[in-house]
Length: 193
Ligand SMILES: [Zn+2]
Image 1 (cartoon, helix red, strand yellow):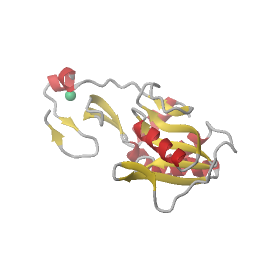
Image 2 (cartoon, helix red, strand yellow):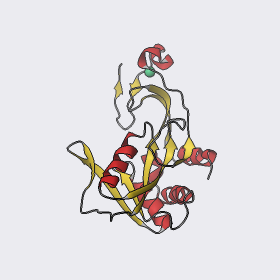
Image 3 (tube, protein in one colour):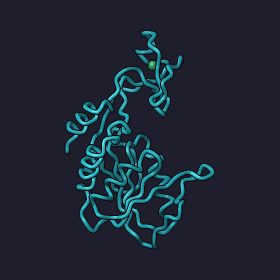
Image 4 (cartoon, protein in one colour):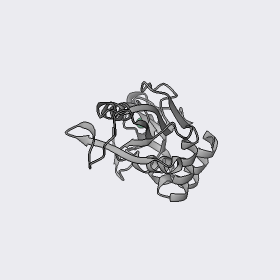
């Protein structure tokens, strides 16, 4: 599955949003990929998970771990395609950790899977939590890479789609200059900035 096919799946499921968005980084962009909207369709989630799993060889990964919430569905589908276990990490007191009785054994080979990688922060925190628990993190994967390939998480990393949609500081945003209200994806409210 190449990047074009991934974009087509997002477009077809209404997950490619066009307008004026405030990214989690605070930058503004005319486009936003809402992974939850493509992953709400089990057949799409399964196909994308299988494509990501295909970037790794069988036997290389014993367990998939994903940062909650965004990584859970795609992590599960990658794990299903690889025929391995799927766990997730979540924040407790601000710190990413394995909860709910999830454990890894010392030296267990783990692949970290996320929906979108932007700075790599959540993936790095998940890698740290797993290493602390004794796992061997063998790689990282995401559906979308918003970092133009730049995010360095310290392990080999793959993405199905690398995008370089323009992003602007609010003061330099041409959409703001046109007076168009900016929207935080996921919320219904337009916010003035
Ligand atoms: Zn703007």
